[in-house]
Structures are given as C-alpha cells and as structure tokens.
Image 1: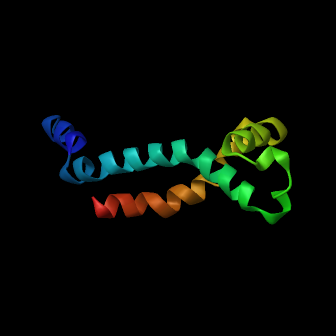
Image 2: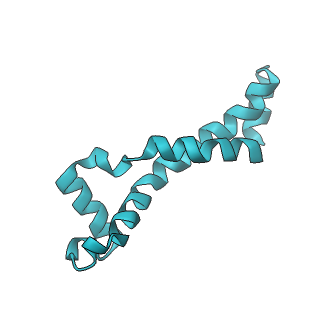
Length: 92
C-alpha cells in the first residue's frame, strides 16, 4: 500500500502504481529465498543423504557455492520468478 501511495503521489499511471510494488517486492523475495530453496532441494536428493556436505542448509549453501560457483545458488531463479511473481501481482 505504501508503494502504491508513493507512486500515486508522483503521478504514476494507475496500472503502474498498482502493479509495480508487488512486482518489485515479489522479485526481491524470490532472489533472497532462492539460495535456501536450492540448498533444500539439493539436500532432499536421495543421492546426497549420506553426504556430510548436505546435512544442514548452511553447509549445503557453502558446498554449492564452493563446488559449483556462487552464482549457482540462484540456479532456477527465472523459473521461480515466472511462477510466483504473477501470483503476487494478482493477489494484491
């Protein structure tokens, strides 16, 4: 509501004032959550059950970043954005 109010005060078109705040907020949420989702999915892989690098989320995050590269923590982000951002926009 605050974002919409600020945009309306700055004379943004109504559609922009309504759609932009949830678009930005939901995108930020996805970017922040993606590494945790990636680690938890990797931890649930049966092939990793006995691997000590996947016993905790922090260790899984560290191991993924160390072995595959820091950017791989956001592998699948585009699919996550495409799936969840429209839901945020339409529900708000």
